[in-house]
Amino acid sequence: MTVDTPARPTLREIMTDKFGVLALRSVQIIAVLALATIAVFALIQLKLVVIPVIIALILASAFSPVIGWLRRRGVSAILATWITLVAGFIVFGGLVTLIVFAVRGQWDELATSASEGIDQLYEFAVNGPLGLDQSQLDDFRETVIDFLTSSQFGSGAIAGVSVAGEIIASIVLTIVILFFFMKDGDRIWAFFLTPFRGHALARGQRVGRTTVTTLGGYVRGTATIALVDAVAIGVGVAVLGVPLALPLAVIVFLASFIPLIGATVAGILAALVALVSNGPFVALIVIIIVIAVNQLEGNFLQPVVMAQSLKLHPLVILLALTAGTILGGIIGAVLSVPIAAVAWAIAKTWNDPRPAGVAPPATPARTAKPVRPAKKAVKPGKR
Image (tube, rainbow, N blue to C red):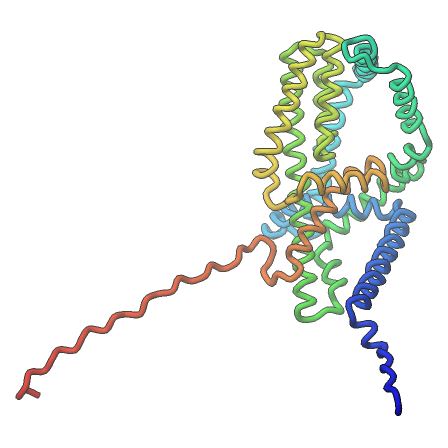
């Protein structure tokens, strides 16, 4: 009598059962994470090149409507590029010069007021009704100071441009790349799409249009929102009689390019100055103004000005800011949100055959069939 031994499962059966599929998916996830880690590490090592390329791409996307308008008027590509670039330098340089001359003598006073405001809050936390433990506050303060003065924070905050030579090299490289992106951006992207055909080519063209539209809209929208925040908070601070209103407005404008937290941090600085110079009541009013401006920005300006440029949940923005700050410091925090917005916009249009911004066609209404008139009855005897 022979006993039938059970057949051993084949390798295919092992890999296709539930546990095998789970193992394969786990290996795939680990491989993707490893490749992403290697890519991020490589980008960090090449940050002296990567950061100028990203900044040039963002600025070229912001200038693309101007260049397109000039080229539609018959202006050559190189002349349109020079006109836009020179005009941008004149406007930007003029604004920077005006701001520097207006507030150059007030920065020391601003730093002193902010430091005194922090000291007053510290005293209130220790000796006021809160009654916090002084040793814990001292430990927290020392931790923050050590972090801010550490070499790791300093090197990350300026993202690889800690040396004056690297700063100059980065600026020159950014300007050169910006010039070529503005002049031949469409031709450069078409060159990268040369190997593709059919659906892949259409997808690549769609990705290019989506990137330019999203980045350009993000920069223009962020600048508009930053200007509104700076004017609103600056006027409110000036009306309350708080000193240093102009440098505070400048700080609010610059900080607003870091979404979600930039304008809030600048508003806290304005409240500290008001606390020192005008007392706690005026500081409380400044905080109310900052909160009102943030609510106006989040509920009205962001949906109207940004439109399709930044459709991200605040949690996603916060995570992007955290990751960008860890990887690139201040520059990483500024660039992280537009990069996340572009990635999300590309993901939404990846399999969409329509160009960016084109709504899906409306479903035609089903029309009723015409009713045929009833035939008249024929009387008997008539034909």
